[in-house]
Length: 123
Image 1 (tube, rainbow, N blue to C red):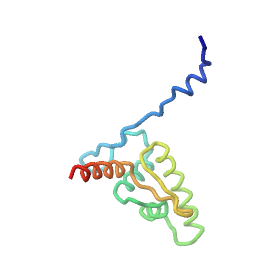
Image 2: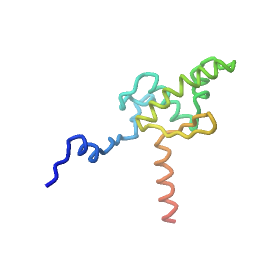
Image 3: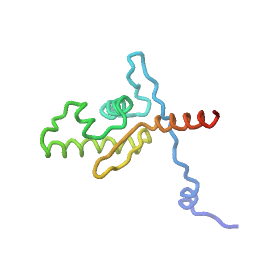
Image 4: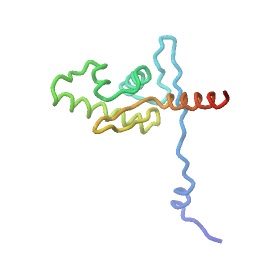
């Protein structure tokens, strides 16, 4: 009989936590904080749900950040990319790099694509 070390066994049995990707909306149409998001993350997630696909610069423009000069664009891109990566880690949005640009869209969209493909297969 072989005994597994606790760390080894834990590593082999680890199953990542799956979260529900739907946020309920209240009567005002704003997503409720059901994922433990901070205020800025929740605001960005709501913007991404409304305007996808989007980039960090586009989100900065929606939030009335100054992006007139190259330095300001770089600063805004870094700032919003940080929050986008946090949302990606929480499995709320998906991303793709195109050059140096991080393009994001909600994971719900992928579910719509799957539903659409299933419906097309039935026809």
